[in-house]
Image (cartoon, rainbow, N blue to C red; front, side, top):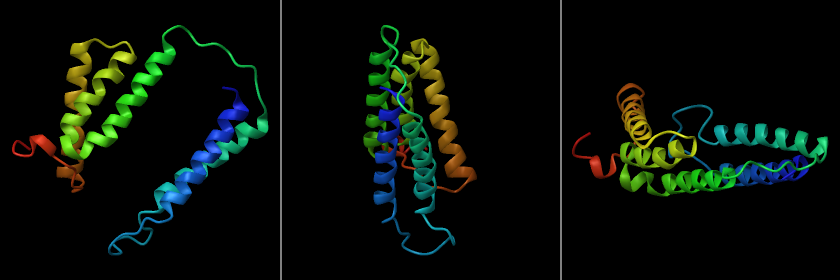
Length: 145
């Protein structure tokens, strides 16, 4: 994929984010900015970067090392599964399961990626639930958390 194609894809992605994010509304106004500010600002940054890449032109495509495409697919599938299973499994279990293929894709051992995923899931849950008072799904571990 050259820079021009990647920039065009980023522009399309930014347009989809604007389209989806513009409809976000909070049931009550608890902040002056509202929930649509984050996707709008993020789509602006992605759109500007995409515009810069598209205007810069196409560079020659370099081949990637063997196995990189498989790892990219594994990480993409793991992140998509994380998004779909997050509500049902809960933050701790979903983060643990997502971290295994992602950690392995980056060369980690099963034990290290499992420990890191579990620690990350618990830490994120405690940070959001106890410190920031943001409710996250507990899922199957709801009785334990």
